[in-house]
Image (tube, rainbow, N blue to C red):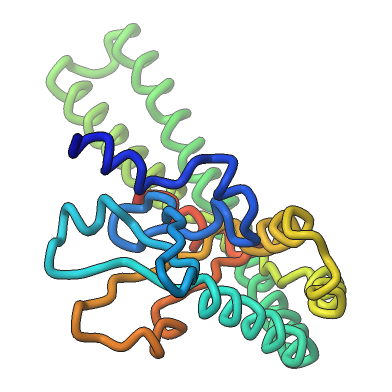
Length: 236
């Protein structure tokens, strides 16, 4: 009987598909998708994480659909209003990124030439050993020295990872979505939001905290923020 009651509290896939934030809200504790539940008697829609409550009984990862939707739209409005400043900042960061890449390319070229030099020295050392121009002990000592230098150079080369390209939001899509938000069918609205924000992360809420501050616990991770997307995806 208890098992049947627990199952009845879980939303079906067909029901959750009706909501504009379906499959977009994720738990900041365990990385799982939040589940939808209609709370009675007011019939308000709430999103919650069943597993977070199991892991941390003292906290709750829960947010109302109304507040979450309002927060997503507020983020979109802020991004649209800050378009010019964001584009200018991105252009400045791209300038310094390009300069960094050029410098790293010069350093990489120098290290690669040094690595090749030790490769030639190793080859010459082998020839000297074959022709009995060097003793076995001296050969092993020099060989270990050259290989150690190549290992050091390779480590330096591996550390020269080019900085990630500067990404900015799709401002046209943001503007378009903001202008037609109220006219879109639920599924179309959900797809449009998901294209811009693949993951909307909701962090924990303590039992004593107010639901009015829920927007402070919601992070809309943009599709352009690849590094942050990878980071939050590792929670799952």
